[in-house]
Image 1: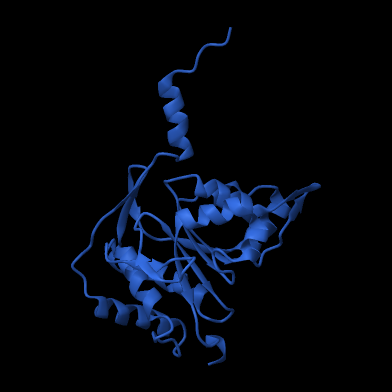
Image 2: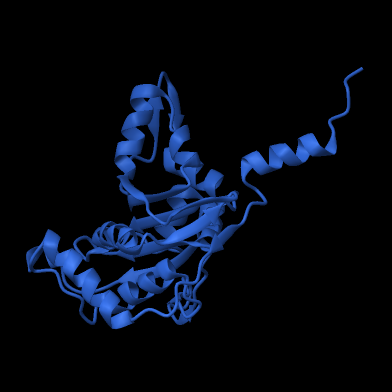
Length: 238
């Protein structure tokens, strides 16, 4: 007869799966939003002298700064109505925008900004810097076709997925066809000890996104990310 599984063993499995873990933010107020914006603009100009914070991107940079510093005044957009709503400090970030709008730059510039003050958070009882690597989703799919695995992207504590929605719908390894990013988002969306940042040409609730990944992924994204949209001209042509 099989031995019954103890409650402690069950809870240990749940903890390892990241289902009931919490993210603790440290409130770094007071800070000066204007100094922070100048710092962010300097980081952008270091990459490209033409970079500037303007009316098209100011809202997202201001609120990414607030999100990083754990400021409860952070705001984001409602994915359905596009109205400004309170943000969630324990959720990630989803940035939608047309090609060339600068959404990829936001994640790259702001992860560098995190290192300036060594902003700290606690996840799974471990204190760490709020810093993330950014990886293109097509690169993740390429790795699956070569190795048959994408597990590391499911469990990285904080990660930025760039160009979500431009990767192949199906990736093949030894005859197995898999929608790689669908499985990754579904997994991460069920965990409370992971932070996911995403850039995409697809608005969060757009029918194209639902058709590509399904209602389950669309629902998970609403739960796991603060939503932003970048509008304006193609900055690569400026």
